[in-house]
Length: 112
Length: 113
Image (tube, rainbow over all chains, first blue to last red; front, side, top):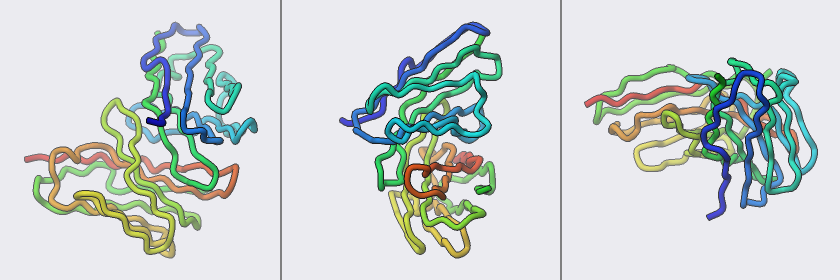
């Protein structure tokens, strides 16, 4: 089945140690999103790609970067994780002309 | 700035009874989505409402959209324990490449016997 895959599902890192989360999709969707969701809160959009065009939300910290080397893959890099970055990170995709977003299973990040 | 409000934020439901939860938003849009989230899990798409007067039903859940009132309702018929989860509505208010969702804070439903 076509789907959105996130790896790893659980990631533990140390304060200040860079970490990369990955997302891949077999849906061939041209839009990919990264969200941060903290406990008992709504998902918060960090950035999104429309094809290779990168769109950063104004309040996304510089500590968060993203790469999209091709249509199928998108990466979230956290350069120096702080305790406040512990959250669930959700990747989603959407195809042009269809509003619905398809979410991956998420990566739970713990910062020690 | 688009604001999406959901109420109530928490609802304790009795099994077998009917309930309605609400989602209202501040800017014109005709695209609204309902998602379900179980604890520790990702978001599962429930309904896509793309026009004024749209009504969608799946099992015990029925969602509708009134774009003039900027209001969506999610009606629960004869609540069962399996419906316990957090329900988010999200509004898509920009067209084309910049399209993105603004989520409400979510409503946590708990069904008790």
